[in-house]
Length: 254
Image (cartoon, rainbow, N blue to C red; front, side, top):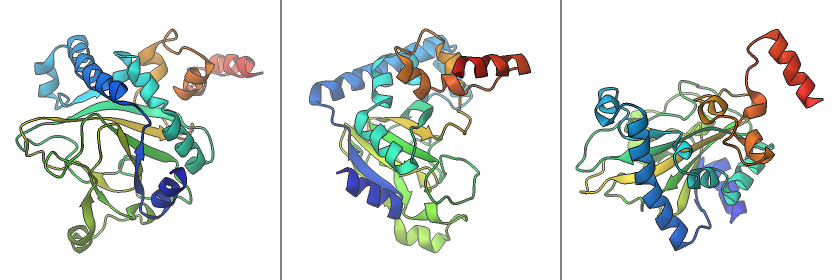
């Protein structure tokens, strides 16, 4: 339930939440992931170029290639949960497809990190929440996300002793979201199976925070289907390029 998820997020810093999607929708997203990855590679110079910069296991702004991922970003149970946790409607900061490669290969999510990187502060309520959608089952063998519970409540990275005692893998079924306060330390873990483990990561923030990519520019004016999507994608919150642009933005709101 949402109450359980809120309590777990406040105390532990993470929770597993059902997306509410049925089997056909879950299967459709699995197929769309692979198609979106192929389209992204074609758009950005091919897989070899992405391998050279260690971006071959990430599909940046995956919604650009398949509309189903726009719908996933606005998943009602998640947006409702995030809104209650933050006390205001969120803006999408980023949405990236992630592949954890098979056979124990290293990848760029494999070290401890926060999803507000390099920020060592605490907040009375979250200003950013991470919702990792499981394209595939997350298992102990295929690299399920590791978390350090309650580390959103302290500024410093915990001791090695704490990590050894309390680091845990979060297993979840395909179609679930692993939701984390963005200040909780977490990492991917080694995928020892013969098949990649796929996910789509969402970071939701208060409008004050800068997006990872300027989504309005990346997606274009014609991408949002309605005013709710425009706000969610950050169109009203773009940084004005000049004083005149600032005045025009003010006029548009009046």
